[in-house]
Amino acid sequence: MNVQNRTVFSNDNLPVLRGIDTASVDLIYLDPPFNSNRNYAAPIGSEAAGTAFKDTWTLSDVDNAWHGEIADREPALYQAIHTAELTHSKGMKSYLIMMAVRLLEMKRVLKKTGSIYLHCDPTASHYLKMLMDSVFGKSNFKNEVVWNSATGVKNNVKSRFGRGHDIILFYGMPKSKFNIQYDPLSEEYLKSHYTYTDEDGRRFRADNLNAPGTGGHRYEFLGVTKNWRMTEEQARQWLTEGRIVHQSITPDSRVRIPSYKRYADESMGRPALDNWTDIGALNSQSKESTGYPTQKPVALLERIIKASSNEGDIVLDPFCGCATTCVAAERLQRHWIGIDISPRAVNLVRVRLEYEVGLLGDVIHRTDIPKRSEKLPNYRTHKHTLYGEQEGLCKGCRTQFPFRNMTVDHIVPTSQGGTDHEDNLQLLCGACNSTKGQGTQAELIARLKAQGVLR
Image 1 (tube, rainbow, N blue to C red):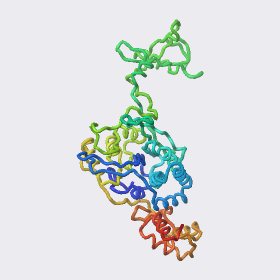
Image 2: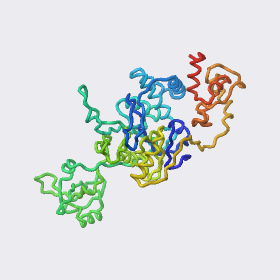
Image 3: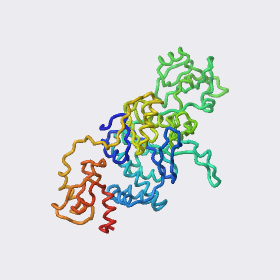
Image 4: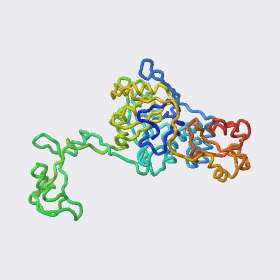
């Protein structure tokens, strides 16, 4: 991994993502803007004061050029974005293009055992689901988690129900790890399932000890001969330990079947479902509130991190904002990297880690773009291959040129996180190469259109 633990980047996350080593991250959680058509700012006097962002999206020439680039490389992704433009708006198209180019980089940096959780709301969740299916593969979709944050409780609306939930789209790579999480047993569940109480006042249920089918161990135990799922030695040990109870099959039956005492206070709980109702949204009175406009509770991130990573794994949050992911990862002994375009983010990380975790002075602040550590041949060695693939056409003006008039160019400049990997290389004619300069391919296409070279 070419980025140290506890690093926060103050920069656009796209070039930073491009500079992170391939297949080096175990878990990504992102809580990007929702395309909510709102502007956010933290209140004066709060820890996050000075933090603000606009969540309104309009289509630009660069967006259109990016879209064309996606069309060349990711046709399914292109169709998903084009559909959103037709069914929703150009603003949604712009938002999805911004997300798409970043999601492609997130897929690249994830390990084969990695997972990604994208936090959104119903504004764009259905369109983002199409994007995620296109980028990560529909077969790698795990859950659409509904987080009942109760954000709609105060909504004074007369034409619809108040919104009370967010959506978290969970995708896992083919060999992704997963640790089952458990919800505490509710009082209603205890009453319906743990219906007995022993002499010590402990609740328990009577579990069937029958062996499935014709398997198990056949012997007589407490006057009953049948196939049991435990050995006779184990049965005698449980009886000595007081873990065996006799339970009538029906109220009027004289036959008493030995069963196993399973105590409620020994249960890990019920495996968590995809509807999370036990973690509430933060309000201004919450102890962990920093005043950051879209802050999420630490408990929410702890559940995600526990489920899809182990101690020592690397957690990445490319929209880290007020550092909740960083705090949760530190508490759970994971390594972490945060990226946020606001320079206020690093201060929030430091303040929260010191206050909530007791970590002082160990945060690394970077404003540069990391350099990938993969060893590659000189990028100019790809010229012959690229000339054949492009059939002699310049990737800018689409005009055919002799081999010697072509120049190997970085689609994403190295100054913006681009690498010498073959998928970041193309051939341009001299004029287009000069026009592009240190800009991106998207910017080149926009300039050529403005000049009338391309339509």
